[in-house]
Image 1 (cartoon, rainbow, N blue to C red):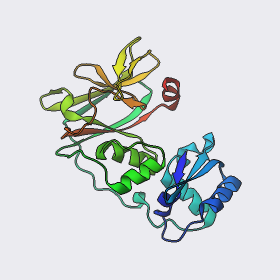
Image 2: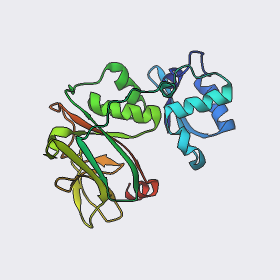
Image 3: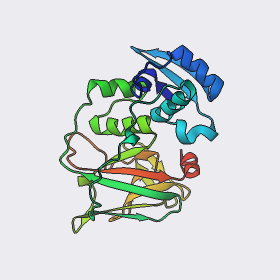
Image 4: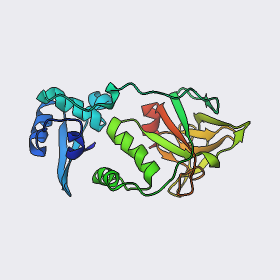
Length: 242
């Protein structure tokens, strides 16, 4: 897990230990350090997160909480301390889970967006961790994953079928030898052990669940409306497919 020292600092008002000191503290208290690398004006710490700690250390927020406990420096900025104001549940999205390997799936419809290049600060944050900048929407989903540990995926809503102005999204196990072209243009042949997200109107795959989106509903610079996915997929299935 690559962690940006500058990013960690944003959770605190007080100065946190420098990268060398953090390396010693984390090694002594919780995690092995694979590598410490200077990237521009930042330092990236590559942390080997042990399986018993992966539930909370696979994000910058989780690592900030760990550092707070170790050092006694209070976290001053934690998004989860503020209760979000949520919009009403929409009947425009119907979700059908047909596999026990997905126990939670949430989707939000966001209309009227403008897709373009990401701001410099966002590009700097994600590229320091080795993530290529794509556009502001895709980069924002990756930012949330690095920040909070929750993977997100955005689909171009206008590339999905609707019935009576309603989207239908499904999650199921793939059919044997079912194929999908991913957003990078690669063609994958799947097995029944894999899991896919589908446009349930046509039962056609739009993503390999938890791994990579499909080309069919990819977000591009012409995208105006998106369906945003946040889900919990069973880890063993994801590891097997990956």
